[in-house]
Length: 55
Image (tube, rainbow, N blue to C red; front, side, top):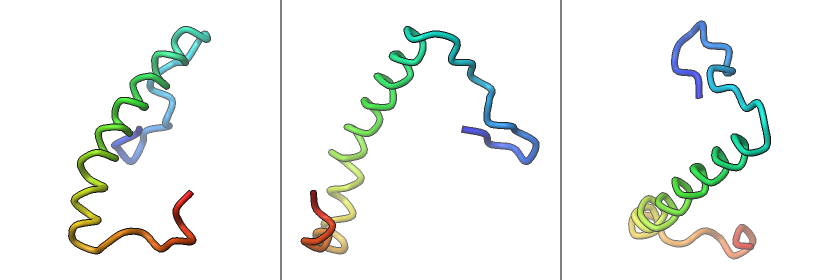
C-alpha cells in the first residue's frame, strides 16, 4: 500500500500467477491474525457486530 503522497500504488509488481498467489497467501495470514486478535479486542470493547452484519 502506498504510504507517501506521491506513491502510485504500483510499487510491487505482480507479473505472474505465482507472484499473485504468494501475495494472496500473505494477505490471508495477515487477515487471520487480525481476525484472531484485533477483532476480538474490538468485540470486547464494543460487543459483537449486529446480527444483520454477520455472514
